[in-house]
Length: 96
Image (tube, rainbow, N blue to C red; front, top):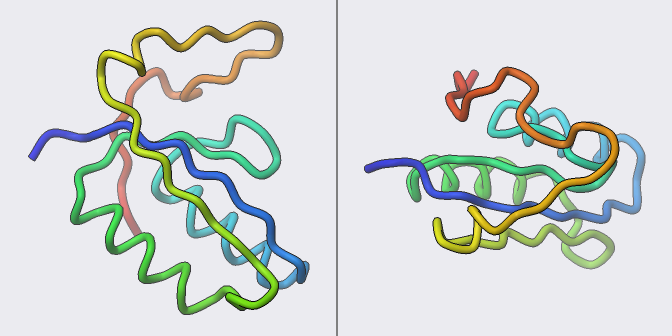
């Protein structure tokens, strides 16, 4: 299955969990803000990402939101200021 576009937003209350979540997300996408990542991945890959994150977070204190963005809307994305796109110039990632 071809990669789909995702916007992942999170707020983690504990610094240790925060660092773990950020590390997990960095292997699935690229950071666009401190608590926001973009990703292009298929459903199975995102499911694996979610499973890893659920093992780390405290659902009473933390939250992570995965927004699926359709191709049509993804193409409408506008960015200003500091470059906030995949720094490698492609949407391919190696999941470790």
